[in-house]
Amino acid sequence: MLKECYLVLAPGGKLRIVSPNLAKFVQLLRQNPDADAKRFMEAKMRFHGWPESPVTGAYIFNRQVRDWGHQFLYDPATLRKSFELAGFRQITEYRVDEKTDPVFRQVEIRTRNEGSDLWLINSWESMAFEAVR
Image (cartoon, rainbow, N blue to C red; front, side):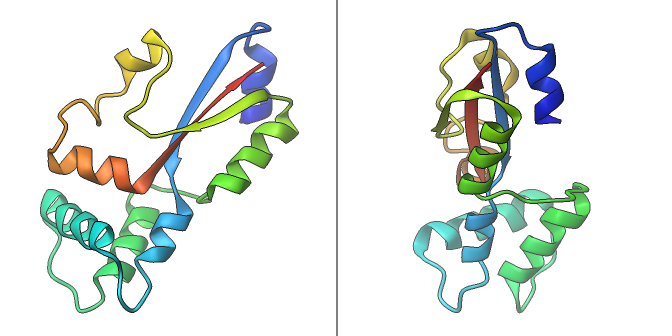
Protein backbone atom coordinates (compact mmCIF):
# COMPACT_ATOMS: atom_id res chain seq x y z
CA MET A 1 0.00 0.00 0.00
CA LEU A 2 2.85 2.40 0.81
CA LYS A 3 4.48 1.70 -2.55
CA GLU A 4 1.21 2.51 -4.31
CA CYS A 5 0.85 5.74 -2.30
CA TYR A 6 4.37 6.67 -3.30
CA LEU A 7 3.57 6.10 -6.97
CA VAL A 8 0.40 8.22 -7.01
CA LEU A 9 1.69 11.13 -4.93
CA ALA A 10 3.28 14.05 -6.76
CA PRO A 11 6.89 14.81 -5.84
CA GLY A 12 6.80 16.69 -2.54
CA GLY A 13 3.39 15.19 -1.68
CA LYS A 14 2.82 14.11 1.92
CA LEU A 15 1.31 10.98 3.37
CA ARG A 16 0.09 10.63 6.96
CA ILE A 17 -0.54 7.22 8.45
CA VAL A 18 -2.17 6.79 11.85
CA SER A 19 -2.01 3.22 13.05
CA PRO A 20 -2.26 1.20 16.25
CA ASN A 21 1.15 0.98 17.88
CA LEU A 22 2.13 -2.64 18.57
CA ALA A 23 4.67 -1.54 21.18
CA LYS A 24 1.85 0.04 23.22
CA PHE A 25 -0.32 -3.07 23.09
CA VAL A 26 2.59 -5.24 24.21
CA GLN A 27 2.72 -3.07 27.36
CA LEU A 28 -0.81 -4.26 28.18
CA LEU A 29 0.47 -7.82 28.55
CA ARG A 30 2.90 -6.91 31.33
CA GLN A 31 2.18 -8.06 34.86
CA ASN A 32 1.98 -4.49 36.21
CA PRO A 33 1.07 -1.93 33.51
CA ASP A 34 1.91 1.69 34.30
CA ALA A 35 -0.68 4.33 35.25
CA ASP A 36 -1.13 5.56 31.66
CA ALA A 37 -1.79 2.02 30.43
CA LYS A 38 -4.30 1.47 33.23
CA ARG A 39 -6.16 4.69 32.33
CA PHE A 40 -6.18 3.58 28.70
CA MET A 41 -7.59 0.15 29.59
CA GLU A 42 -10.35 1.65 31.73
CA ALA A 43 -11.30 4.13 29.00
CA LYS A 44 -11.17 1.48 26.25
CA MET A 45 -13.40 -0.93 28.14
CA ARG A 46 -15.84 1.85 29.07
CA PHE A 47 -15.94 3.38 25.57
CA HIS A 48 -16.69 0.08 23.84
CA GLY A 49 -18.93 -1.30 26.57
CA TRP A 50 -16.85 -4.44 26.77
CA PRO A 51 -17.41 -6.77 29.74
CA GLU A 52 -14.94 -6.99 32.60
CA SER A 53 -12.18 -9.50 32.06
CA PRO A 54 -9.67 -11.07 34.45
CA VAL A 55 -7.06 -10.49 31.71
CA THR A 56 -7.97 -6.99 30.55
CA GLY A 57 -4.76 -6.32 28.64
CA ALA A 58 -4.94 -9.55 26.63
CA TYR A 59 -8.66 -9.04 26.06
CA ILE A 60 -8.12 -5.54 24.65
CA PHE A 61 -5.19 -6.66 22.51
CA ASN A 62 -7.24 -9.47 20.94
CA ARG A 63 -10.31 -7.30 20.39
CA GLN A 64 -8.13 -4.60 18.79
CA VAL A 65 -6.83 -7.02 16.20
CA ARG A 66 -9.99 -9.04 15.57
CA ASP A 67 -12.71 -6.37 15.70
CA TRP A 68 -11.00 -3.97 13.30
CA GLY A 69 -9.62 -6.57 10.93
CA HIS A 70 -5.96 -5.75 11.38
CA GLN A 71 -3.70 -8.12 9.49
CA PHE A 72 -0.48 -6.67 10.85
CA LEU A 73 0.30 -4.28 13.69
CA TYR A 74 3.36 -2.08 13.33
CA ASP A 75 5.69 -0.73 15.94
CA PRO A 76 7.37 2.62 15.16
CA ALA A 77 10.61 1.10 13.85
CA THR A 78 8.79 -1.28 11.48
CA LEU A 79 6.49 1.41 10.10
CA ARG A 80 9.43 3.79 9.58
CA LYS A 81 11.37 1.07 7.73
CA SER A 82 8.30 0.31 5.58
CA PHE A 83 8.11 3.98 4.56
CA GLU A 84 11.82 3.91 3.67
CA LEU A 85 11.48 0.75 1.59
CA ALA A 86 8.61 2.34 -0.34
CA GLY A 87 10.87 5.28 -1.24
CA PHE A 88 9.61 7.97 1.14
CA ARG A 89 11.91 10.52 2.76
CA GLN A 90 11.51 13.02 5.59
CA ILE A 91 9.77 10.40 7.67
CA THR A 92 8.66 11.90 10.97
CA GLU A 93 6.72 10.47 13.88
CA TYR A 94 4.23 12.75 15.61
CA ARG A 95 1.80 12.50 18.48
CA VAL A 96 -1.60 11.60 17.07
CA ASP A 97 -3.04 14.96 18.10
CA GLU A 98 -0.13 16.81 16.47
CA LYS A 99 -0.97 17.77 12.90
CA THR A 100 1.44 19.58 10.63
CA ASP A 101 -0.78 20.19 7.61
CA PRO A 102 -4.22 21.84 7.47
CA VAL A 103 -5.56 18.96 5.37
CA PHE A 104 -4.56 16.46 8.02
CA ARG A 105 -6.27 18.58 10.71
CA GLN A 106 -9.57 18.35 8.87
CA VAL A 107 -9.70 14.57 8.56
CA GLU A 108 -8.68 13.44 12.04
CA ILE A 109 -11.72 13.54 14.28
CA ARG A 110 -10.67 11.19 17.07
CA THR A 111 -8.39 13.71 18.76
CA ARG A 112 -10.62 16.79 18.63
CA ASN A 113 -12.27 16.47 22.06
CA GLU A 114 -9.30 16.55 24.40
CA GLY A 115 -9.94 14.64 27.60
CA SER A 116 -12.74 12.44 26.19
CA ASP A 117 -12.41 8.66 26.32
CA LEU A 118 -11.98 8.56 22.54
CA TRP A 119 -9.20 11.16 22.73
CA LEU A 120 -7.44 9.27 25.54
CA ILE A 121 -7.77 5.94 23.73
CA ASN A 122 -6.50 7.22 20.39
CA SER A 123 -3.70 9.26 21.95
CA TRP A 124 -2.38 6.27 23.87
CA GLU A 125 -2.79 3.40 21.41
CA SER A 126 -1.95 5.08 18.11
CA MET A 127 1.09 6.47 16.38
CA ALA A 128 1.20 8.96 13.52
CA PHE A 129 3.83 9.14 10.83
CA GLU A 130 4.16 11.63 8.00
CA ALA A 131 6.44 11.18 5.03
CA VAL A 132 7.25 13.03 1.84
CA ARG A 133 7.55 11.61 -1.66
